[in-house]
Length: 492
Ligand SMILES: NC(=O)C1=CN([C@@H]2O[C@H](COP(=O)(O)OP(=O)(O)OC[C@H]3O[C@@H](n4cnc5c(N)ncnc54)[C@H](O)[C@@H]3O)[C@@H](O)[C@H]2O)[C@@H](O)CC1
Ligand SMILES: Nc1ncnc2c1ncn2[C@@H]1O[C@H](COP(=O)(O)OP(=O)(O)O)[C@@H](O)[C@H]1O
Ligand SMILES: [K+]
Image (cartoon, rainbow, N blue to C red):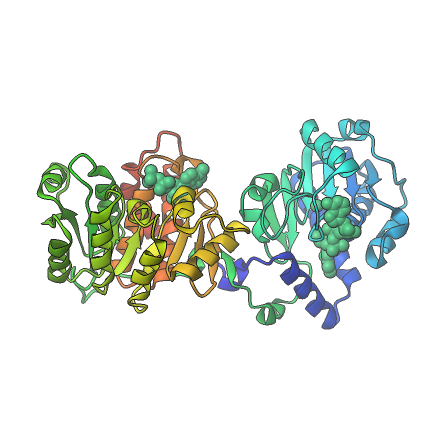
């Protein structure tokens, strides 16, 4: 397991600052570019045998890196063709110097060059992408993608915005991307993640201490960020916390049961399902260690929360959209317990999101975690401009809740601006009820007293790891709680 700082994600402006601070401390840009090119060359030599290669260089320093790679591969005896997009005479400083050091020809683009190569090095555009790709550049990118060669991208696949993961007009589909110092958000956010292929991070001599002044607040979600609660030998089920999950009606019990099972498997000392007697009768046919508490309406729920001394409450999975859920949320928010708001608990406030945000603000001392998918998110927050990280951060700040904005690139954002991008979830996790399991894991960790942001980030990672461990098609949500012990053991 690495250190937290290993997983910080730097946007292009932060990366430029890291370069600048390093240069200030005496490492020249020329040295950084040489190291960057060398890192790409080494990654290629470690993975591939010699083959005909086409290096595509763009008009900036990304192109400069490309000239370094071309020179080094040629020195190793590789057959190298090189195309430059843009005006050679306009290259600046280190990029111009590396173009001068290139002893081969600089050729005009022609699709045959792509067909004749087995590998393409994409050094067209990197962190300097500032507008949509069009014209010849777009033609080149489309020709490379259509040819389905091994493609190694320098820093980011050209056309992918390193800060947001957006594709600007067109983007290279890489087999391997070699980036420098730290990953960029665009390597993890869709659609950039799908364009990048395997991503490796190379050390090019940028000093670690430059991270201090940059003080990033965005990380890849990794176990280094959180500490799971451990069972105190002197503790007992009550010290490990009680999680109450609000049930749906008799024909909608499955979702809350999945959440309750996940909460118990995540280490909550006790878990209760609370709801109408009719619904509890259905649960009774399925659960053993989970308790059933009658709570037909908000006043009874208030009593249950008091009697159980609930330390966390999960509400939303098939809870029903409407006034009853709004009343239940209201009472839960005043109970002092940590809260997970999912699915119907979010949709119930679609017409009055400010009311929900007022409930959240009622007691800032207890964490509230909300787990919307994009549809639920839009109902509550409308359309927000920006990357998925921007959007989740704005929602967290506006609502006062920790927001888990789900998807294969789930983002976890806190009201104070800290955010994480999760990258370990396989596509098989997109199955009915898997979000209910996630809500339950968050609830189970909160019941054990884990701080809200940590519980949210850990739950998302654990959820993804469980699906990875299942590892094959056919995963259903019921499988997930049973895999949690294995995941948790791997984290101890
Ligand atoms: N800054 C540094 O110290 C280092 C930077 N390195 C490399 O430098 C790259 C960043 O270099 P630059 O800032 O020069 O940026 P780029 O090389 O990404 O490109 C900038 C140039 O591309 C043009 N451009 C931007 N979007 C375009 C579009 N859609 N269509 C056509 N042209 C477009 C810009 O006008 C500018 O001329 C990094 O990605 C990395 O590969 C490495 O050499 C390591 C050291
Ligand atoms: N393609 C995917 N890759 C990885 N994880 C996914 C993918 N699609 C969905 N998920 C995850 O599966 C879960 C689905 O939750 P949700 O949409 O609420 O479904 P449900 O309501 O059926 O439980 C979320 O945690 C989401 O991040
Ligand atoms: K590139």
